[in-house]
Image (cartoon, rainbow, N blue to C red):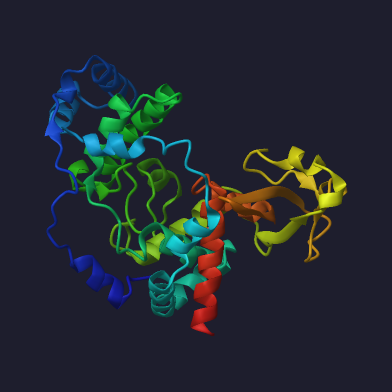
Length: 342
């Protein structure tokens, strides 16, 4: 299928923009850890050392990426209501209605092919980039290289540097496979790219050419973004036709047995009868043959909100490992669907 007319027009518009943070040259190619990374890329992927040294010599150190990766102060309480208000709000809802109307055919096709409802895809695109408005303007090579070799001092520093070194490899491989300049990629301070904010590794594993133009382009093709999000969710466990969440409440007279279901990872793994036996009430009757996890949305000084998350809820958390994120996606998608009124 050829690209849609509006899509071709969007691809033709490539305004010149400046980077969010130009950074400073840091002679990355001379760093010992970078030299080891180059050796690995030469051995595993057939690069020439001179080629990679030349590429990495152009990378800039981006201090703002490091600062933005530092964890928030531990004393700041989580507040679901405040978080939700950032995303389920008039600008995103109205933009979501326009996006859904414009791309109704592609959204329907994704739902039919992958089994992911349009409202979930719309919710993710709204939360991630306000439908392509805020895709980030850091040079991906700068941001990812900085985080791969100079991640801030945190308890998970080495694991995170290992992750970003993998993403640096994926950035270089994606650029080589696509025939593009790796420095042409712009994205978030963490290196996420395009409408759906895929990391380079996710682009290589999960992105699809959904507009049928023969190439994958998450930076300029909302239709590719639609199909890629749906494929990502399916590859992370989304089940066609299954629900996401059910409201829950705690029976104050039953003690604290329900606490055993908190902080149990991003997976639906408990039976409904055992959750209920611990004092979790369900105003809406969930299917008895499904597994669930107890989702707690902390509200600062206000009461915590509870839900039962089904398998598809936890599939969304694989996009961003946060209960707040997944519920915002669900709520925004529902709000757009309601506002659309079709």
